[in-house]
Image 1 (cartoon, rainbow, N blue to C red):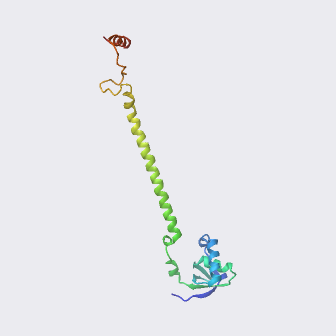
Image 2: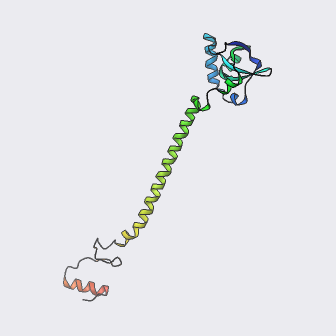
Length: 171
């Protein structure tokens, strides 16, 4: 591993993509740590003409800037090594985002499955409803025709005759 050396902070270029990842609370914590025990881990830079391009160590660089430092400890890495830095998926914040998205996808799929199940159940109930509806009033008599509504049992012969006359039946 290359030996750490001191680099002038104003010569270090920070790519725009990296600038977007600055977390002020992390910068403050690192600055406080640097005040207490000094810079423990060097940053990584690579040469690009007259300037140095930051490869790794954005928050350490910003902490040193905030403390008014003019130089920072770093290691000069060749361009090939800089390209072999940890893949995006290996970074903890990216992994946490990936897990969150997977959970949201799982919840969406469960919701869609529940909605599909509810819709299927409604369709099944709708197709069974006419059969259930047509047997109402027959009091569960399997011999009664669906169109005919069963009447109460007459108490006497004269009640039966009156009932038959009313319904147009033969007696």
